[in-house]
Length: 251
Image (cartoon, rainbow, N blue to C red; front, side):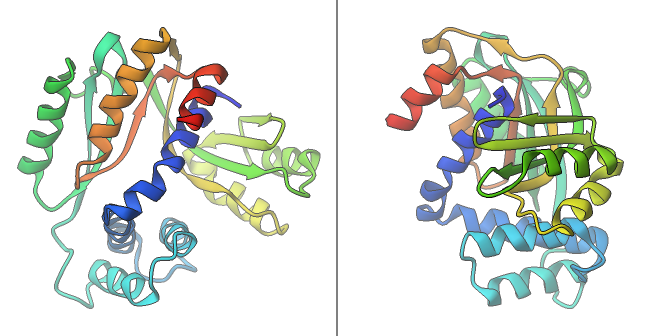
């Protein structure tokens, strides 16, 4: 499993804790609302919205919550029009680059909260462009190898425009240009392949390896950032080793 997938695994394992704190539904609702505002309220014509709804359903979000979020975004409800998507750039401890994705109705609050967390853990905010050059925005898909033919996934993905297909022991990862997202998504789902994850990600150009203690220090920063109400995702160029991932999973 590649470094960025390990990072994703850690974040998915946090999902249960997020749900207990009541934050997961809020984040899912904001993503649905923003997706509907950008691309319209019809999930059949709005791939981003359809994926947001799928994620919400996978996390047992009530149907009424999903419908209200769509209504806010599509304009049939008065709420939600002030939401905006913002990327903040910064550095965590040990020089790790961070891209922090927020969906917020209060830009001043969001940037103040992000800056506070970074400063508290020895990091810092960066100017626009200071970090983003170290990442590429890409289409990302993961498929669990549970009765799925990896060769079929490879063929479908490459034919649909994927740049890279990594086949692991239990997971296939597909990465492609943003403009190929829909074609790859349709090729895979159209052939009955269940997507464990599908979306747009900030993928690091190069990953950095730290010691175990330093890695855990960075992960604490990411945890603190992800606990902020306005933060949707945190991307970094940190490489997480198999050994350390095993330790984290066991903890």
